[in-house]
Image (cartoon, rainbow, N blue to C red; front, side, top):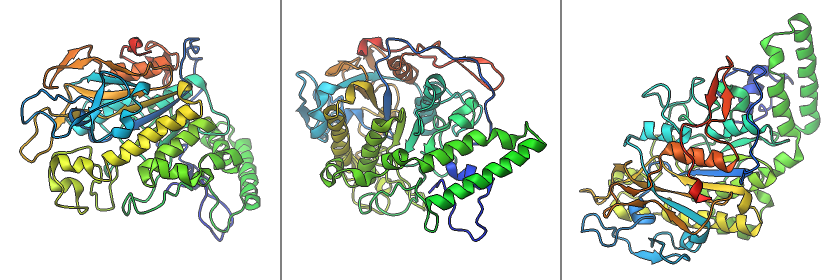
Length: 473
């Protein structure tokens, strides 16, 4: 876990390098921005103040969840039955009955499309909202176009005591560096997200989620913490007197953010799930995903602008506990239950039942608190699944046509946008690319695709290359 304080040490001082590393405010490097030009003003037409971006890593099956084809031939038609939602004419699969009761809040985009069936590069494009500048490069780099949270941080500014952008429950990676779309790229480390890195051990359903990265370690209290801060200030002052333009003095902004986050009672409270009623925690689901959804709601309610929630899990052996990538082989569930195969895996507790519970709870909770109108909720994946069921009773990667969801933040609920063909293979009407989807999110915050941000050399870049789907609002 990445923590904002060091463990108990005998020398009573904290390494500047260690503090910065542990803060995760400079997680991807020490590239600090200079005074950049003023950015585009916020449009008066903005409909969203916050965004919860849920990424179903691996590619959920639109054919079995959102866009069933009951009249398709055997081998294509889902083995699951369609059910009515609370919107006449919109039907979902039987695996998500609780979400079906909230279809009036959803815009179901059934015409998502791109041309990449490979996980790595499709993930990078989906999270960035555009093709990476370096073909084949999929991990974070300072050459990247900034991700959503970083762009909005740069255009809209800080969020008081709280970080503008948080990633839950951990950065999305399969063993190497995080995938693109999880850093500020060329904007520099000051705009990177706060990441709460967690141990990747154990089942997702048999343990509590402990998000304590901003709490004091045993043996460190507030008085000792403040003493360390004063000592660091004295050292920084001495360094500035010797070499005023040194990189050490430029780091002061990072230190201030880290210290303020640690010492803020509001920030600590926002990250503390123990303040939630037990009944509500049960409603979201007592697993890592459910509690991450609940924490995302707490964070936006406290003022965080963007929260990414990644639905995936890998244990210490690299075993994938994410069943959205459902090819129908026992290996997809590793040691959980080797007998689970194909479509049956969607019913497993790590997948549809948990999502049905947690996502419906999030929509319900946001609405009851009066937050849905200003909180844009996105549900995305890197692609969907093949129309044809494969030889192992699963479905393979399919990017030509799939489904994603939007809710709240000015989105008109109760609509299905676009359409797939008779068997769900290709887009029939109103295609939407990942670039367009990201541009639509920017539009909700009041920014046109041509709104400009600048890199470290003051070179201008548009925030998006897509076209917003304004008909959704």
